[in-house]
Length: 340
Image 1 (tube, one colour):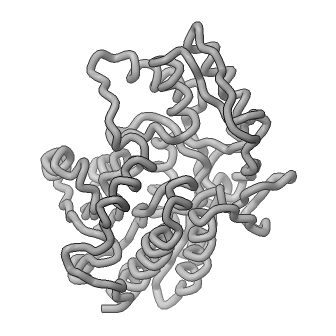
Image 2 (tube, rainbow, N blue to C red):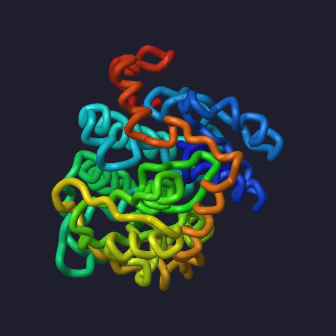
């Protein structure tokens, strides 16, 4: 099977693409990431992976000919980055991914998986499942809601689109992110002895290790079309619905001498999520817990080879792109073409 992975050199992509290659998939990894492209090109080519340096809004549709399945990971990837420039967020996270899905169907792909987020639930007192009404509180979450609706609506005629609403990611990837809760907590605890936490820490989050995110995507690729077509699946574990203050206490226990440093106002995003549907329908259950992730990250950050890079903070990267007026690709489109 030939699989196209957009965002293929990103945080999830650096885990998913090698796993797909190991399983014998023929992989095309598309990414516009100018920060890591040269670092991964040889690694991917040695695996037999083709890498395409381009943008989902502008790449030549001919690149998708012969693709059987598409995994659409490319997006501005968290709430703060999405709110920094909401217009760009909608341009990439909605228009770009709508374009990819429609090209996939027109070019006879059979499966399309879009990476969405449980942040779509926003704030709620009850436990959300896939039938719960979304309550998006940010541009990032709003765009996810819209792209789910419009891309799942084109199911049919042999085309099976699905959405994975991922819990909050954590864990090590070669394209590391330090702007997500657990990774950031462990990094600051190891490097400064202080763990910054938005008060009052009572907010709930569901979590999922990045390795389990890749496993959920593969489960989606390998499930029967009638099981996934037009469907939304929360991707995570019921056991990993945790208050942030409890995660902070785990980090504090693991990294001796750590102090919690409170800041800001209470976070208005708080939600717990039910994951039974993906467990039952796709036979998927995460393998990695929070303690595993904390130990993994602690080892990495204590290693003498570890070096902090600005690209590990997504918001910093996007600020630089905006300051540089990084709006148009080499193709020069003012508005992305949605068709062929």
